[in-house]
Length: 271
Image (cartoon, rainbow, N blue to C red; front, side, top):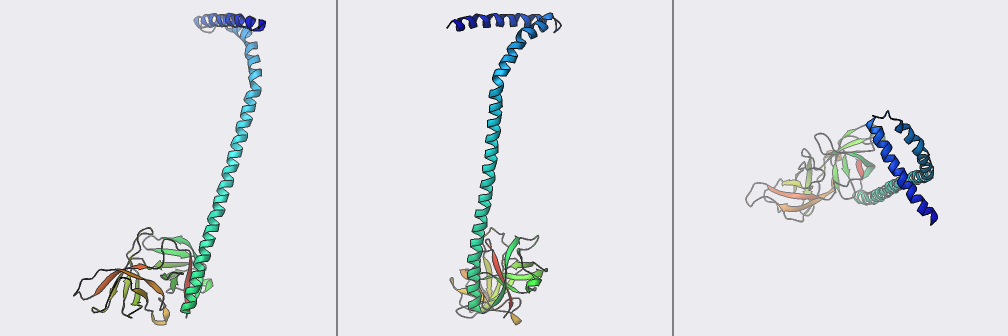
């Protein structure tokens, strides 16, 4: 209590003295003896205050640095966990696609070499690249499919990769037949982007053929099975676009393969 009463007048005196010294020093442009006097008077006070505050500042800096380090470590761990989760999900998806592909090829008696998509898109074409090529026995003009059905055809190979033109490419044409009636026709790509709806255009060669929504299409097959092996599921008719009396029957077809989620693909290398 006595100490508090003593401290308050001292602080008042020091404050008044400081104001006076600042005024004198300002008036003499910093050349006044008041500048030196102020340093002598307040220097010890500043040093004492600095000594008192220094441990707290150091503690704050240490705690802040430690906290930043912990946050960085947690962020790194989270990134690693996300990467592991993504890899696990991709691996699981690839396993599912591979299982479907094997079931399809076994049923169709097709011999395939499998590869995984490692790149997508081209400058002027709708393509993907897989991590299997000439060393695995793949050659140009071979059918490419996944567990759902037709994907496209190999257009170029290197020793370890193959470029696949997707059936959705605007320049792609596939010979197909209606699975129930056997009517044959040609299926062409629409050149849609990777995220756009993947409809294909069907034109039947017979003007009198019956064409209805829900009919299933399979590949007609090429001589020697290249570029297209016969009997590969392609898609389903979703909309008949021709009018009665027209010379050709046309329709839109939704492919069975999901071209926006391609993973494991199979290349038909022989019958």
